[in-house]
Image 1 (spheres, rainbow, N blue to C red):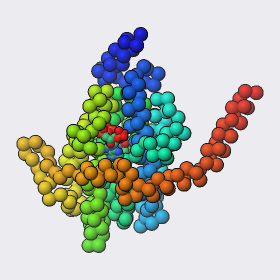
Image 2 (cartoon, helix red, strand yellow):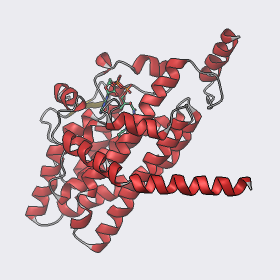
Image 3 (spheres, helix red, strand yellow):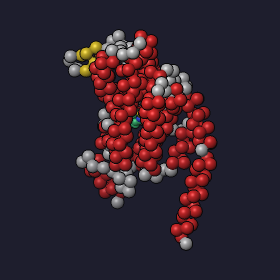
Image 4 (tube, protein in one colour):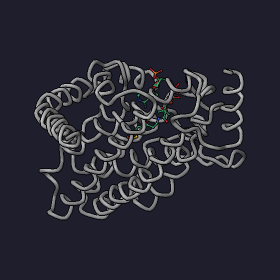
Length: 311
Ligand code: ACO
């Protein structure tokens, strides 16, 4: 009976065990996971664009090889995540269609432009740094396939974070023009990175339910605070200044006080009106159309193999 299945689901979640694809789950749990995992997958795929923009202009062959590997990792993350979402009973074609028609979202952060090489460093340090803070707890999420995908994704993200930090460290210890370029990148990426964690807890539609289901393990604001606390010492080592005059240690809270990002801007970017939203979506649509022959060829090959097996 349905009540027994629901009781079993609750017991598994309460005991910190994993829900697996064939287990019974509330419809809303399934929908929330599809929404979050798909949004995460789309972010990885759209996220290839701002950095892909610099592959042909990387300052050395070594930097180019590292950046290529990193952008390919993002594609890999997108594919694991689409596969994790598919275990919930939706197909990759449907998910791609939901992205292309604008019915599913991707992270706000990828709607900002990469103006200089230092931006590639800032993305690695701050954007991938924020992704790690957000995703390490997801390794303990209650849905097995998502939690397991996150383990490898987080290991690769930590390589990405270090490569970005190293780019900024090199620039920050270079000529005065390079130092200025690094500081400018930090100035532009700081607040959009803070906004990646989502709206403040009071305005977060899904947090309470997602935390009860142990999909989310910490609230948006808790993770944002953790990120700020982590970055302060790292910025000092770089010799760069976080663009927040109110950033200061709060002895009582044992955490940094900081200025919140502009949440009205976050809402504008989420709703499609950020600096690069149109460009990102147009590029993705073009790439999808240009790749149609690959999908058709793969489907024809699979059909041929399947008919051979039958004989
Ligand atoms: N960008 C775009 N949309 C966002 C963002 C953001 N930075 N933050 C919140 N939203 C959206 C939510 O999707 C939700 O919209 P919806 O109801 O239409 O789906 C709405 O704003 C309200 O937010 P919350 O209720 O707080 O949403 P949620 O509980 O899903 O929390 C969060 C948002 C923290 C981003 C969560 O979905 C999450 O942890 N996702 C997995 C990580 C991820 O997607 N990372 C992508 C970027 S990292 C990378 O790719 C390198």
